[in-house]
Each structure stands twice: as structure tokens, then as C-alpha cells.
Image (cartoon, rainbow, N blue to C red; front, side):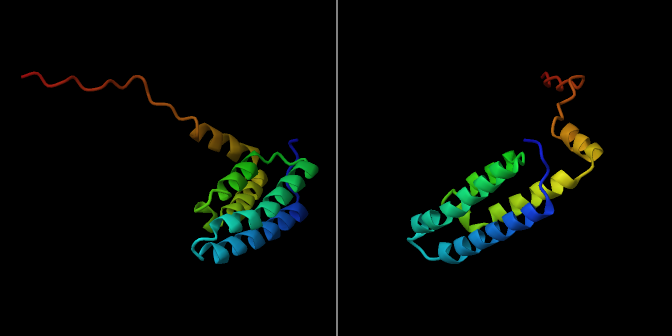
Length: 121
């Protein structure tokens, strides 16, 4: 399940997510029908999940983005489209850049720094 996303699958997922986000943006602006917008966008989310599973792409971030996009008031934002684009870009990065990004996400505080002594009066 570590296949990279091909350009064909990327375009297919991108078009699906753009359609879904456009529907959510226009219908999400109408007050009171947010639940129905969620019901309308659910088949698009399932379709993206199925394509990711069939193609064998490691889509952890894609799944997280799709799940975040199902949150009622956050669904107005184009989270699904941005997630597909970011996953594709991240998979195209060289391995050395991925290692640097991984190291940056694991920054730990320097233990040699001591907190200042309290002021004694």
C-alpha cells in the first residue's frame, strides 16, 4: 500500500473533490440545510475512499482530509481539494526533502537549557 499517486488518479481525485467542494460551498451558504449538504457530499467521499483503496495509494492524509471535510461547518472550506493537492505534491518530493520535513516535525526542546532561578528578595 505504498504506491505513489499517478497523474491520472490525481486528476481523477482532484476533479471529484473540486465538484464536491463547489457543491458544499454553494449549498453550504444556505442556512438550515447543512445536514442535507453533508448527505449530498457523502457519496463523493465514499467514491474517493474507494479509488484510494483500489489504487493502493497510501492515503492516510487523504483519509484525514476527507474526514475533516465532513465536519458540518468546516465543510464550506475546500479541504478535500487542498488535501488531494498536498498529498500529490508531498509524494513527488525527493526522499531527502521528506527526511528533512520528518526531522522538523520531531523537534524536541533542548534539555541543556535550564529555567532561570527565581528572583530571591
